[in-house]
Image (cartoon, rainbow, N blue to C red; front, side, top):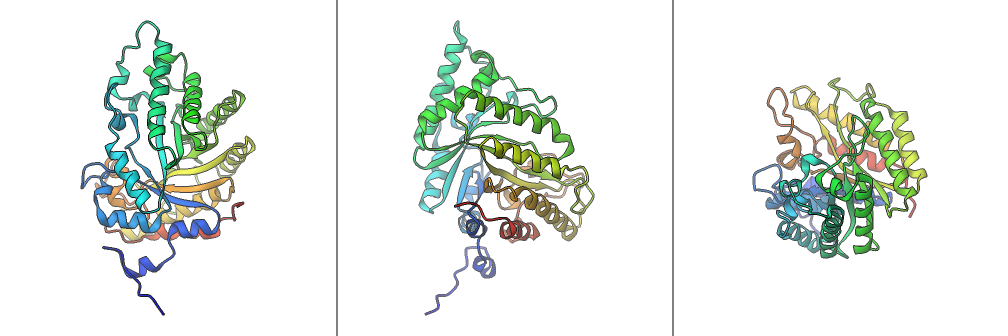
Length: 370
């Protein structure tokens, strides 16, 4: 008996019949997933409100990560109030559809993204005690709420200034007495709340020559965390890459050998790796859509082939699947004002050459140990 092919709403039957990106990843011992945001409908952060987009995510992914809903600015709008509603809705939907969930993030160590209430918070006469309590209780509450469902957390996000290589300070880390002490506390609090979860440091160092200082600083931080017996399991490689304007896949301005060495150095510390936020910024590419899409796909394939050759990487997450819901639409617009096309599917949920590039890289990468 042959069962009919059932098309997803708004998605062609041919696209539905293809092996999903998660299926391709699992064949090699990997996982594939995407960010999913529950912001206002018809905004780049509002994909969760779109049933066609949810269907695409469910069809292509094995896991999701709430895009912003577990960050301090949303989950904790004031010192004495938590709002778990947006995150709860995404997590419940993922669970109902058999998708795994990653948590992002428990501490964004960046003053720009620290909530206003925390920036101006009065830590009193014993700031270290108050700061440690605030951070520990926050992590315990967020992690505890999703215990058993969220099995991987970005504990600390973007703690390094990419230009100087120095650790960033925030009002919270100043109260606690230092950034490294704050990071250490965050990981220990997360481990206490989730003994079996994967705990990750997440950052945007990359293969560009301009990222050499950043890469070196990340290695220094990881080595120090290991020296302090901090319970860190993995490094999150965000994977926000972009065109240098050449219009073709090229390593000009990139450092493939140095990138390969960086990945090997992380592996040598006994850490796993994940690509956590992959997309391709096409700001500098031509306006012509076929040319632009081809250049994006070519660049992505070069990057993914190089990166996924490292078998300690066991997860690939895109920062969204459809151009309609990419954060890049509202960030650093193209000079010609055209919408960006940084993700595997276009605004109508149709597969693009980038989808083929991701699929090709998943097929070509080495098998992971099972």
